[in-house]
Structure formats: structure tokens, C-alpha cells
Length: 257
Length: 277
Image (cartoon, rainbow over all chains, first blue to last red; front, side):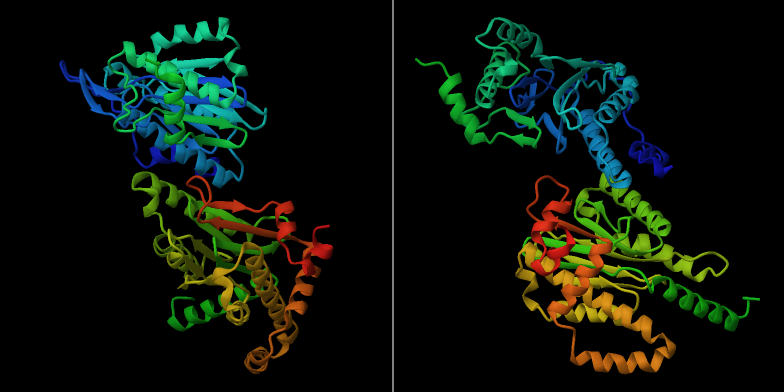
């Protein structure tokens, strides 16, 4: 029934099927997307991702946007198979809008989280078959509680709340250790960092991931390609412009010779 | 007994009469383009009458709340499924009207064994460029109209014409600021509401009087002060509802309902006096 404001149900009634559980044939290289991170800073949550998509040892694309805005206050950062991930974002985006417009109120933060894990559960068969595994990080601002929040998932749809930060993708083991170190013994915990310093940390972390993981793209200064960095605060989602990232990168990330 | 064509025509005529009566007390709705987008406003008692349909499409309605709700849901469903399966730019007001609303409303109106929809609907669509802004209105019988610049819903076509006259008397509206557009909209609303009230009074001998009346009124539309005074009186008892579709608004959804405090600041002083304080 449409009256429940459930867009996914509506799609299913129309014969839509999410996730394609076809087994990957041996030797087929499926595109993957790679290092994403979310951390709580002074004013909210910062979400960042590199821009490389790979298939096996081929670089497919160097301008991938893996940090996707679902609505004014939430972002889904994706690692895994882009085809499934983009479809997930499209379903979520329409679901949240449909709910708001039919029910005349925002879907609650918990409701949004449930929608993400529901889609991941729908996708389990495809994830296990090897054609559709997605391991996202969901970050958003919970208006009711007045707090920024981060959640991460496994491919089966289990949801975990991250207290300080979350990472995903093939480059994530590298930076997970760094995050732990910086947060515990750094000059100040991540949660106290102002916007600019948090952004610098994110750029450094992604540069470290690119150093050790071939599937994570680094900064390409010739092409003016920088990671995608978004900030979520009470005021909504905001994307840091390339020009600002460039300035910060040149000042605080490039090593002086 | 309705099998005979004459009976059917008679039954449809009765329906028109019945429906016209249903709208006689309804609040008009007005939508117009302004410098930064589209503004739509009405005065409602409790249930809202202005809604968001899709990223760039807003709905205003007159009639029975349950019927409006039903039509609103069918539009929302159609718009979102289309926007998901194709793309958001393929969701257009004209398609929603032609393939969504019009056939449903017309069929319900002509199936004389079933209840018709007691609803008149206005769809406002924000174009990427101002010249692409589109306004669509549909009557309870499924007749629809497309126009540019502005559109209005009123109890009768005569009321809608009065509202149009009020807006077109201010041809600068397309370049107006939001506050100016709200004032122009309120004047049109007031003109519609007054025309409706006087038609109600003169109901004894409707057809000739209405026609003569139209001629007489064509000369003098009530002046701005009188219109705004009427709006102020109405707003004191009911609540003013106002939404905008903002071309440069953030994100993909351009619809925004104005909160009472913001609306309070935008209102012309003549209405603000007792309206919101």
C-alpha cells in the first residue's frame, strides 16, 4: 500500500528487483571502489573518499564520486561494486524523498538506517555470488538528537555505530591503524578538531592509503584531481571545493623538500 | 435509467451543479512566477492545501481533503516511480497532468454511479529557466489548462478570471522580489475571495446577474488597500499558507514551505498588523 510511504515496496510491487544474484564467472574482473572514511570532528561528521575505481589491476576511472549525498543531512560513502552501490543510493534517495512528501515529515534517522540495512539484506545473494558486494558507511546529522552519527555495515547488512570514526574499502586497514594512533595519542582527539584540521587529516589519511593500496587513487595535481570531502553539520551537507582542498594539500600534505 | 443519452446528460448536469456548490465556500489558491522562482499561497483552516510533489513540482488544491489526498498520493507515486526508472528531469507537470490526473478525474466525473472527486488542482512546475516555468490547472470534470506566468484556482471560472485580472494588473510580477510577489499573490487571493463571496450573495438569479456583474466589475477591481484589508480579516481566523519553488535553492528539491516567522516578515504591513502578531 502506498499509504505507508514505502517507496521500495512500491518498486517491488511494480516488478523491480534489487541486486542481481548471478554468480561471477571465474576470471571476470568486477569493478571495485576503494578507500572511504568518516570521522567525527568538532562541528559534525567529515566523510571522504578517494576517486579511483578498479577492475582487477586495471584502473577503470579516476573521477569516481564515492561519497554520495542522499538528502540534505545524510551521506552514503561506498566501497565495493559501484553498480550496486549507485543503485542503492538511487533507491535510498527516492525512498527518503517519497517518505517525506507522502507523510509530510522527515523519515527519522533510525528509519534511514533501517532502509540502508534492508537494501543490504536484499543484496546478500548478489554479495555472496561475488557480483554485488557493497560495504558502505552511512553518516548523517540526527536532527532530533542534535548529534552527528556514523554507521558502518558488513556485506550482510549488519549495522554498527562508530563512536569516533569508520573506514571501509581495500585501503582501509592502512588508515585504521593511523586513525587509532592519531585519535588516542595525537595532540588532540579527532572529535576536537576544527573543520580545517579535520580536512587536512582526511587528505593525509587518503594519501597514506594510496601509498600502500594500489586500488586507492592518490591526488593528481596535474589533472587537479582531489579526493571528495564532505562535511555534515546541523546546517546540512556541504562539499569542500577543489580549490580549498588544493590549498590545504599544498600547505599541509605535500612534504617540503 | 441512465442508459438513455438524455438522462445521462441530465445526470452529468446535476453533478456539475452539485460540485459547484461544494466549491462555493472553498479558499482560492494562487501561484505566480517571481524573480527567483514560483510562489504559491492560500488560506487554510487546519488541513494544508499546498504540497510538494517532486523536485520542481508543487501542488495546490481546493476541495474535499480526502479526495485531494487520494489524488496527491497517485501523483506522488507516479512521479517517484518515473523519476527512479527514468530520471528526475523526465518528471514533468504536463505529463503528470495529462496521463495521471486528467483521465482519472474525468472518468470519476462521468461515471455517474460512483462519486466524483471533489477537487480542483493546480500544479506549478519550476523550469530550469524562468521562461520554462509552467502552471497547470484541472477542474473537477477533468478539463485542464496550461499557462505561463501565473495560475489560480477559484470556485468558478469568473472568480479565477478576477484573480487573473488582479495579477495582470501588476505586470512587473515576473521580476518581483519574494515579498512583492507575496503581496501580489495576496491581492489576487483577496480579489478571488471577494468575488466568491459576492457571487454567493447574489445567488438568487445566478446566470444573468453574474454576466451583468462581470461587465460591471470589469471596470473596477477593488483597490489594493481593500483587498489587503480583506486578507487581513480572513487571516485572523484562518492561517496563511505559502510555499516557494526556488530556482537557486540548495539540493535537488526546490520546494520549501515558508515558516510562520519568515512569512511574517514578508507580509505587507497592511496584512501583518493583526495577522501574525
